[in-house]
Amino acid sequence: MSATTRPRITPSVFFGRAALIVYLVIMLLWLTFPVVLVLLASFQGTLEVSFPGEFNLDAYKTIPPAYWEAFWFTIRAALLATAIAIVVAIPAAWAMVRGKLAGRRAMSNLVLIPDVVPQLILGIALLTVFIPLRLSNSFIGVMLALVALSLSTGLRFTEALLEGLPEEYEQAAQSLGADKLTTFRLVVLPLIAPGVAIAALFIFMQNLITFELLFFISGPSATPIAIRLFSDIIDRGVLPYAVAMAGILVYVAIAFYTLVAVSLGPKYMAGSVMSRKG
Amino acid sequence: MSDMTNTLSSGRSAPDERDEGRRISRRRLQREKLFYRLLTLPAVGIVGLVAIVPLLLLFVGSLREQRSGAFTLDNYINTLGNGFFMRTLATTIMMAGGVTILSVLLALPLAYLLARRTMLRNIVMPIITVPRMLPFVVIGYAMILLLAPMTGVANRVLMNLGILQQPAFILFDWPGQAIAFCYNGIVVATAVLTGVLMSVDPQLEDAAVSMGANRLRAFFSVTVPLATPGIIAAGALIFTSVVTAYAIPVMLNGRVPYMVSLLISANLLTLQQQNLAYAQAIVVSVLAIGVTTLGQIVLSRYGQRGGDR
Image 1 (cartoon, rainbow over the protein chains, first blue to last red):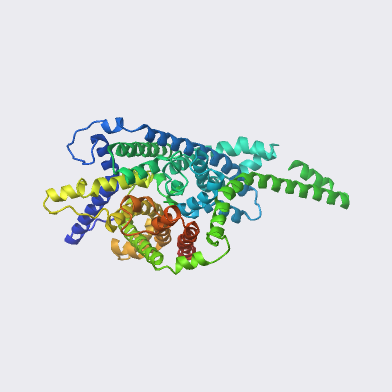
Image 2: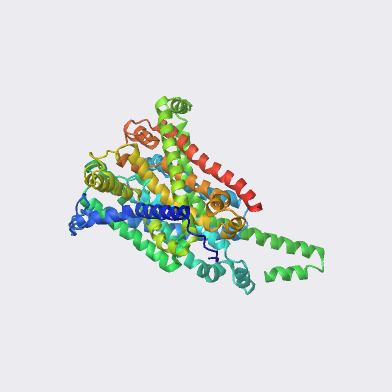
């Protein structure tokens, strides 16, 4: 901060400051209320949150097996989709950045299509294809849909990572006799590995919370947790154990943030590649 | 690399050997291109199979009559000529536009503070990031816990304080939806705009202040214009996410207002008018992609001018 001469506190400055502080407090309360309310309600086992309320774990104990099934189903599909996307995206991004192929721009735009088309529309399009292939309402179908989305994000991340990597390292390795694959394995991969790990974490989280894309292609035998929570509220209203499950998703989000913040430092969270998306 | 230089140096003696060397290096280059092409193949293939082909089929389906399968423009005529669909679309656009403007206006000062005060940013960053890592459904649960007529915290507090005589039934009406969308919009806008405003050089504001502008004037006539591309990008993001939102409108009673995503899914799932639904889906995606690309175009024009200054 540069040293500026402090202006005299006139009434207008005073009220300006006060208004700013009130605004800040209101905004912070507004931003934190969902997490706070969901956690409070989940520990009170009631929908009527009260502030000096009794705390118990009843809501967590009554989470039905179907919820846990949906939770682990989502984790499995998200993990597998992330792994596939990363394995496919790294060589493709490397070829796009280093290969100087004709039509590179067209190709990277093509791969970004699942990201640009609204998820709801892509979901409907996938439904039309998955029904005749018997892939709707199945693990494979949900996973494939997530792969399309993850691949876009993965390519954007890895392309940015590789563009930031000077080509000289690879040229040095090749001038010493390494072929392309050896260079990739021994030079490129170790250099981008930390960035790729963070990218994988982001993609995994994005897969975990995807709703609109999966809404049409999921079904009774393939229900991601977000859709389970959604359809229960439609059929039965808000239930304490559903709030407890929502609380568990809050813990997952907090764990994710801690992991990223510890490995990157919090300042990198602003303006990260993820910020461009909703 | 090394054998290429060998052929080049030995090729100096005779012209046909030089040709031979060129041919080898060209073939080598072609092999390299092929190698790179092969590496991109899995990515392009997967995207083709799970995105491009389905979207093309959706488009073809929107051009077909449901019974006979003959090609026709009827689905589009019935979509764009249908008063109910157009009214629904207009409601959706109005909702999305209002939410976008409100979110950006409310988030801009906060984003500015976060961009300029490192301590505050470090404290607030988890508060912005954690909600973005939650399914929108969880935000919907929180809205119900806060605003539900009988059990919601806000209603009970306001009634205990005597401000409200009766519970306010705003949750299952358009204000409830607007509030839920605004929550998401503010979170997204704050995160995006913080990054954008951090890239605006604070010295420019200091310069304006040193020439006699007060902080507020410097903010509006220096910082905001420089951040306009980012503001437009954030706005396009929020707008498209509201236009195609599905969970919140249904959770918070999807009758008032009727959003276009609900109309599409009703046609698709309950009314069995798939091909009409496909045409409507195409119309909505053209709108969403159009807004995004318009933002990009404005951004690139504006961004270039901003760079010159």
